[in-house]
Image (cartoon, rainbow, N blue to C red; front, side):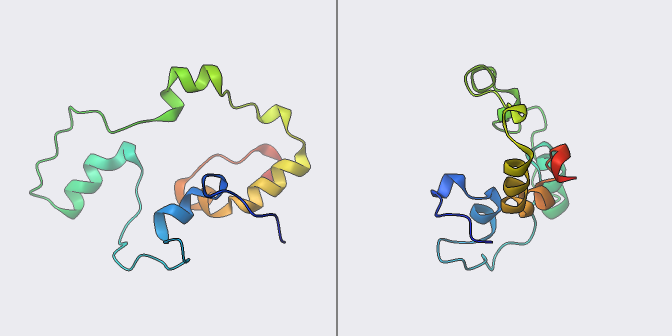
Length: 106
């Protein structure tokens, strides 16, 4: 299916993680992990790294009160047809990042 031209921020997040602007997969990419698992992931790859687990793991937009207040996730505002199109577009994100799919896409 051909969707439309999208600004880079509208594209699946996996695109930015695994490939450059030309669509070439980064050859140095060895593993993809979740920020919540960062300390364990770093210690698995580099056991002597000395990761400080007492530090926060980074920005988590799901916990960002300003984002939640001003940009609430309102999946109920979208039709099932739109949700299915979005799920098709973002299929790699759902797979790689274990995002929860809307009911219309399951």
